Amino acid sequence: MRRVSPQAVAVVAGLVVVAGAAVLGPTLFGDAAEARDLTNRQAEASAAHPFGTDDLGRDLFARVVVATRLSLLLTLGAVGISVAGGVVLGVTAAVLPRIPRRLLTGLIDILLSFPWLLLALFFSVIWGATSTGAMLAIGFAGIPVFARLIYTLAASVANTDYVRTAGLLGSSPLRTSVRHVLPNIMPPLVVNVAAHASVTLLSFAALSFLGLGVQAPEYDWGRLLNAGAKDIYREPMAAIGPGIAIVLTGVLFSLLGELLSEDRRPVVRAVRETEEPAETDSGEAVVDVQNLRVSFRTDDGSLVERVHGIDLRIAPGEVVGVVGESGSGKSVTAMAIAGLLGPEAQVECRRLAFRGIDLRGRLSAAQRRQLGLEQAMIFQDPLSSLNPALTVGRQLTEVSQVHAGLSRGAALEKAVAALDLVRIPDPARRIRQLPHEFSGGMRQRAMIAMGLMGTPRLLIADEPTTALDVTVQRQVLRALHDARERTGAAILLISHDIALVSGFCDRIVVMRDGVVVEQLAASDLDQAEHPYTRGLIACVPGMNTDRSRPLPVIGVAADEEVPV
Image (cartoon, rainbow, N blue to C red; front, side, top):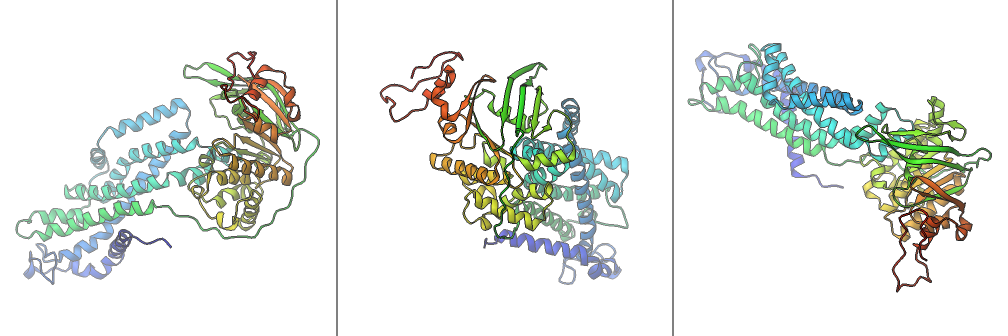
């Protein structure tokens, strides 16, 4: 059990006192706050009147307690307006095309160039010197702050692998934002909301102190501070009392943000393991690509082609390895097949089909559901591919719940079985953990398990063993092998290591500079004819390699021989 810090206890206790004063204050202290006693007017602080009395003999301590409700309601209302408006503007700016996005973010930046309190004073003139007008003024003045914050946070998360995977699975933009983007921007957002609540409380007090906020006969801490400041030299507690309430409540809001931003794990119940082996398809190709060309638009608007008319066909259950140096177009080809390239990419092809589904046009809801269940992408970096704010169990169950329509319990049961299949120990416990609690190899195997939550027919593994030691590489490849044996899925494996691919795949596709230079069976690798393929083979040291000589280097030209 995690030890509760003294700070947390103090903050919770303080907030309970403030909330109690807001809820019960008018009932318990309302009569004392309004009762006039002219014979005891402007009395000094005493046990009967801790903050003294005003010029009508009303108890100032009671009035401070009663004013808690109005002060908090106005503060929370203004913060709600700021956050809601900021979310709308920030998310809108994140999803707009480039030119409208720049215009909107430019407008936000212009508004941010003005001091926040100056905007609040400007809006208070528009809506008038009332409590409602002050709430609207301070709320609208805070919108640009949250709009810029939310836009920046959302933009940093929107291009991560797990968000792109959600798009591959058919998740709508709204659902993706709620489930994957908002949880990851929530900690800094909560901290800023709490800090902003503290500043908003001070701003309300300032407006009321200046006569631009709450008007008589209503009163909040700012009006009480104004009244007490007029007689501060004779009786300081008349002004110090409401000042203490403002400062302590503001500090509590700030400390609350730190507590709410601490990591908390959702609770997911353990379930038993059940998994039915999938039937292996036969017949039509899982992937059929003809004359695929992929171009990217540069800053000046021109197109640069990176993949130059390749053909690729993957049969059911076949394991195909794509090898080549960095920049050869391997990952771009895989992302084009998975439909994960962004709007800056332009894909042209004669045919691009997955199990008979033409991926070039608009897909129906049934086709998107089929793709979400039958196609899985395993990215190179599992730490950025898994959502750090959600447990592994919640992420694994998404496919089964969204596309297969399984209940939460059934999806969890299937997730435990999938983790067990990829040889993650104690899956019923591990499923409740967050990704950072997994080792690198376990995270990669959890990604493979995620691909098994549907009815996979194609697993695209984009360099799944990069940066892993040989022991963990073997575990990941064994997990892929077991997944293929259990489900009958085809595998498209992308790697730099031709030795690894030759020992795992049925067929090898060699790419260089966006072109397929050679295709051959893995068993015939020693019969490779293209100089580039032979160069890749020569770069892999073997038992008979002469260690007195430097390792060979692949030539610059595609047809350049490499010494062996």
